[in-house]
Image (cartoon, rainbow, N blue to C red; front, side, top):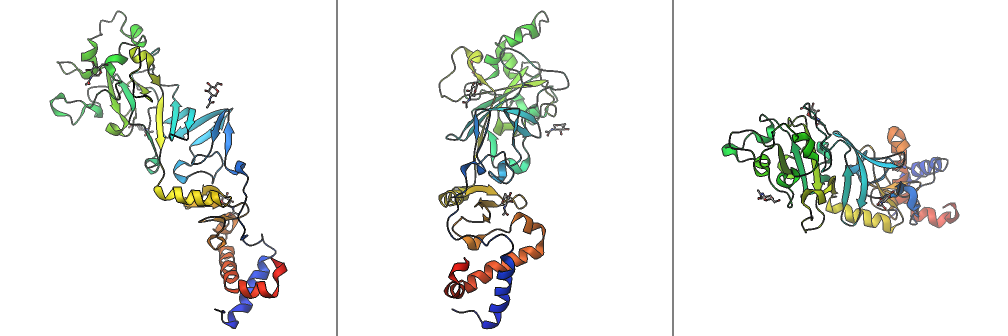
Length: 335
Ligand SMILES: *[C@@H]1O[C@H](CO)[C@@H](O)[C@H](O)[C@H]1NC(C)=O
Ligand SMILES: *[C@@H]1O[C@H](CO)[C@@H](O)[C@H](O)[C@H]1NC(C)=O
Ligand SMILES: *[C@@H]1O[C@H](CO)[C@@H](O)[C@H](O)[C@H]1NC(C)=O
Ligand SMILES: *[C@@H]1O[C@H](CO)[C@@H](O)[C@H](O)[C@H]1NC(C)=O
């Protein structure tokens, strides 16, 4: 169906004006180098949905990973964590927090020590500690929010995937802490609170029970974290646990199809840095679908800052769609 003649002239003028700007979106599939968004930090591969380049990766995981002197670091409001491993098959990250206690050493101060783990609210749908990760909160005061709202001393503390405070309090780390001050109570009592209402020395909770491990807000002196990857119980109690924070990521179901189509057409999956919508990076242009659909070209980064240019690009795309048949027939070599 041919467009009205009166519209062809302005459309062609816009098209001609655009030939001095970057060429219009190619119709053939892109072949974006794999290194556009994939990179390495030390010996860890950083790939979708993570990225070290702005605009790459999924928007829910933006501004998260940084490569600092060959160490991959994850930044959250609660602090910086070293990333020890990124498991793309199981969608898991293993984090190390130098400010947390483990079985060999306690790290605690009366004012609260250790970063804990606090996510930005907008990031919560995409990233969270594993259900099998035990957060062990140490030396929390009786007034801690942790112990409020649990009548009849029904504390939230429990074993998480077989890891609990009973075993943790048997760690060598506690030897010096308790040495000579007679504070040591039976591990069972310590772990779950004693009969006279003193708070437990240690309280293990899964992420889902608190959803933010803010050590100072919880009025604790420190924390530890351990995770279990295998369903088998670690031999040797808490000395055999893996210490660190195990986090998993998830993306909306719609992202799988989008990203698959983007990659299949030679693009790299990314996101719009302003709207945070999924974007397929096709080399010298971006698509809101994939690199075969030039009709879905996203306004270029520069254009987004200059609305008149956006209008021109939109015009050009529209015009090229309306007139491509006629254009092809008369001047096939211009393309
Ligand atoms: C990276 O290298 C360290 C030793 O430098 C090693 O412990 C670790 O397992 C390696 N990680 C990966 C993902 O290969
Ligand atoms: C942790 O809690 C303290 C005290 O409530 C607050 O000032 C701080 O901003 C919180 N930190 C994070 C990362 O939410
Ligand atoms: C937690 O595990 C220990 C063994 O490590 C066990 O003795 C204790 O009863 C468990 N506590 C709960 C509440 O299941
Ligand atoms: C495509 O999107 C990426 C990431 O948002 C951006 O860095 C780049 O400048 C965009 N390219 C164009 C041509 O708009």
